[in-house]
Image (cartoon, rainbow, N blue to C red; front, side, top):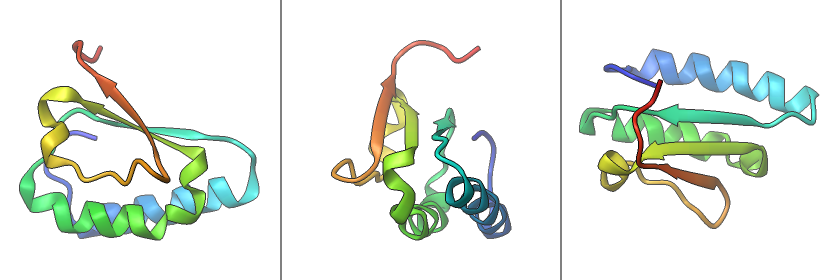
Length: 86
């Protein structure tokens, strides 16, 4: 995820991810390269709604923005990245 993402983005992504995760045994990784504080509310709501699939979701957060992203690591799989994304 990069750039400024609004409420509509998170609602759409939630719907699509839920359909995939509900109907398969697949897992998915959310790569978060940039994060703006204005997205916190929408992102937290997004994760809360997908928490039923948390064991199937990996959240890859660059260490430079880890302090901005609230991820409940007791249910979600958190991956910390220190290198540059390709």
